[in-house]
Image (cartoon, rainbow, N blue to C red; front, side, top):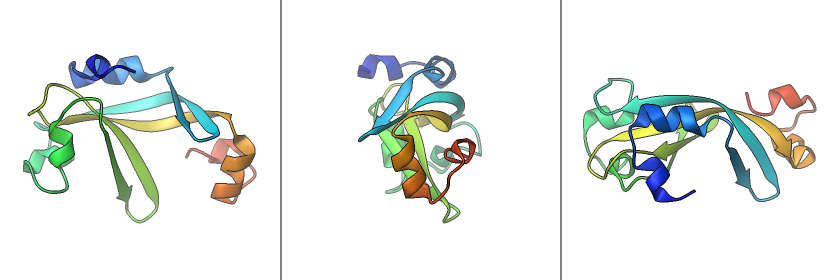
Amino acid sequence: MKRAFFDRPVLAVARDLVGCVVTHGDTAGVIVETEAYHQSEAACHAYVGVTPRTRVLFGPPGRAYVYFSYGVHWMLNAVCEPAGVGAAVLIRALEPVEGLDHMRERRGMDAVRQLCS
């Protein structure tokens, strides 16, 4: 996707990402759930302002912000809005569509419904 797609209000980007496909190597999944986060909300990592950890959230739009949540899951976010505004869309859930065997192997499970939970 072009950066201009992400250089918009975070709520609009969150809605428009549903149905898009995320690929990584030989695996892919359709985005089925997102969450929008803006620096004005206490739940947003950008709420604390610019720090070494949150710097990427303040632009430019279209970059990935990835963090490890509670030592369990890697969380993928797409930075949105103009540079200087802390906002991102969390890719909350994917429907696996390609590379399911590789996903199962990496996650150590057989059930497809558990792959992206």
